[in-house]
Length: 112
Image (tube, rainbow, N blue to C red; front, side, top):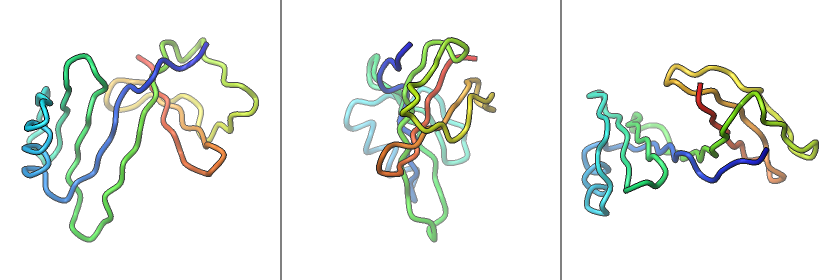
C-alpha cells in the first residue's frame, strides 16, 4: 500500500491574523479556529492547511503530512527509514514519521 498524496501542511506563523487574511485572500476558507492563534484552512478538496502561531523568538517551520488510507495495512519499503511507528494523535489521526535521504522528517497520517 502506498501513500495517497498530501493530507495536510502544518505551518507555523508569528502572526495568526495576518497569515489567516493572507490565505483567505488566496481562496482558502477557515474551517476551524481554536481561538488560540491556530486554525485549519482548506481550499476546495485540497490538502488541509493547519496554521499555528508561535512566539516571536522561534523560527517558523513547515511540515508536510502525506495521506495513508490504513495505518494497519501500510508497510513501507525497507529503503524507508521509520523514525516513529504509527501512534495515536490528540487530533484524531494516527501518525508515523519517516526520514528522507537528505534527513528531512516526513509525517504520514492515517485515520484513527
